[in-house]
Image (cartoon, rainbow, N blue to C red; front, side):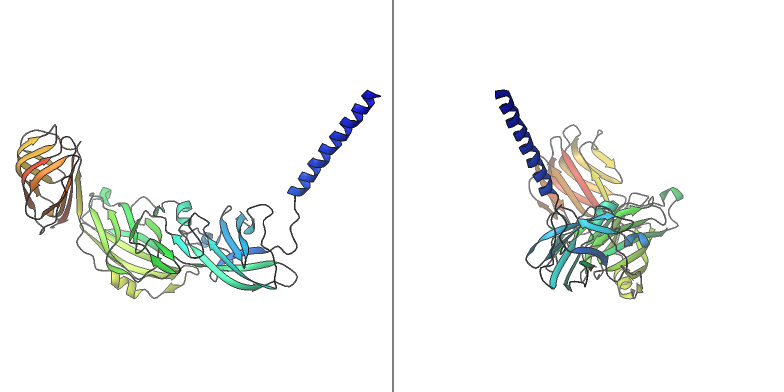
Amino acid sequence: MKATKYLSMAALALMGVLASCQSDDEAVSITRPNNAVSVNFSVGSLQGTTRSNAAATDNTQRQFNAGDLISVSTNDQEAVIFQCTSTENQTWTEAEANKFLLWTQPMLTFSAYYPVTTGTSMTTFTMPADQSSEAKIALADYMTRQLNISRPEGGSDIQMQLERKMARVIVRISGFGSQYRDDQKTVSNVSIYSEASGIENGNSTGSSTEITPYAQGDGGQGSTYTALVVPGYGDSGARFITLTDGESRTLLVKGIPEMQAGHSYTFDLVVGKNTIQVQSVTVQDWATGEILAGGQAEEEVSVIVPATITVTWNKDDITGSGNSFTKDGVTITAGSIDFYDKNFEENGTFTTTLGNFTKIEVTADFFHEFSGTDWSGSYKKQTWTGTPASSVSFSGDIMGFGNTNFVFTIVPTN
């Protein structure tokens, strides 16, 4: 009898466990509510969807990629993240299981934004400076939309057309000057500058920001460099494009033109020795590809300020003997040079065969005991910014004790 009693109790306990497991499974699996909102997304006037294949110029820019996320909220309901589950069919579903937006009224106000990244919202976006890959430039393609939508008859699907808040800049290397040898007809270290660093409440915010663009090509003729920038009224005194040519010279296009959200600007450049010519500017509607008037943009960026050369010496570069040291077209001469401790003593002179110095920066871990006309700064870093000249003198001693560094900015004279 006792054995029978214990067996019966064990069976009852097992049935209880099975019932509990069944209840848990049922709790996890929730049927999609009939009033759940389904959303499809598009950009601007396109009939299909577009993401952020932001560097693309063909129909692939009309597709979101599988895994892309868009945040949608409505009225007083918590935001729901929708995920693209199929690139081919452009289908979307809730990223978090059993979390839905619901039709609680015949008409709701929907708010959506892309991309879903830390710090991004309907009103706030910080532009990523590294846009060097397809995935990274996609995260710069800020889009939002707010709409009042009535529930469709006989269904719950809605369409939301997102609006681009950024502008696209494409720099195309159209050619090179005849001064270059064939092996020098190449560029590297291309940077594109945005007038601002972000958007807040519909306005640009922050200072000019250097962007590492998405590069397509090997740096030769036909190569393109694409960046998404914050729209603005333009800044004629700011850097816009910098690059290094095949002779390791840093060249500059100065003057950021006025840009509008949702527009794409293509700048065709001809790279010459010590100069860049903006051959043409094409302005397009980013969504439709329609070519718009671009004469004003071309006029604003067609004037180039002289290109500069940057020469840098670090502590490992400075070796030798005697009273002078030369590297990359720049020479320092002093009454005495200690090459072991990188000290330059008893007065000295910087000279260059490349052109005229416009700026010289000297840094050291310890201290300086030198001065001179147009020199200023602290005991660890001093800067010369005088009238451009091929020769600049200092008085006293530059004492680095093993770690002296120099940066020379030079405007070529030829």
